[in-house]
Image (cartoon, rainbow, N blue to C red; front, top):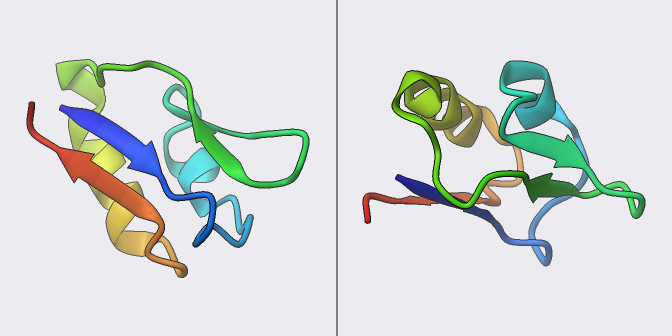
Length: 64
């Protein structure tokens, strides 16, 4: 699984960071970024939850 945050859509709410800080962090500009290029299997459910709860719908997941 790969995850991407669209910085044009991200509003910096930080909900994703609260749900899964191992994958997401807030960058210096206040918007979310993704830490690993591949999401470990044990964190995939949390990443899906973060994507579904993102108010800006800025998190995109691919199953590559």
